[in-house]
Length: 192
View 1: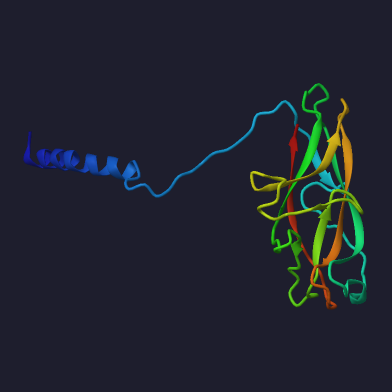
View 2 (view 1 turned 60 degrees about the horizontal axis):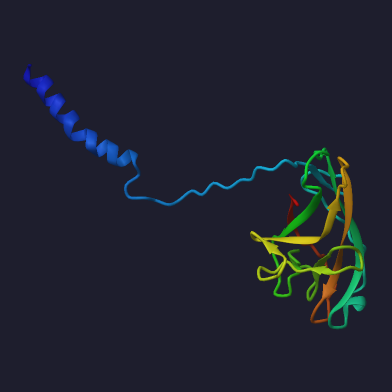
């Protein structure tokens, strides 16, 4: 073997363990956790007939209607609809799960409008005039970081169904001031 070939072979023998160490990720940089679910039920979901992102418009109310502590106004329904469900599935109840983008200490959606109304938030309910849905992390209805809401949709063998939830303005401290109000929640559906 000529000397040049010997040098290349020696370099390859030295470099191979270093390359293997780099390929294995030494030292470890972190962990990736993969999560999923296998179910015999799948449905497509909509909010007020809109797939994906939706906007629910609340009525304009006066600051005076939110002057008192724990005052509410502008209750507005929004409909969770599901279609394309498996009618043969044993999982016939569809539940909404909500996770607020910005949640206040009372479990309501914080007003995120820049320069918007103060002392006002948005409260989700399992129906208009129904039970409030707390979006706080410590709420009793939290499932894997999401807040399971209300009775859900009982499909009863049908391929589609709906449930009307509600949202309203709430001023826990009272003394709401005039301005824009914006709040957002992510939603998903789960099956029982």
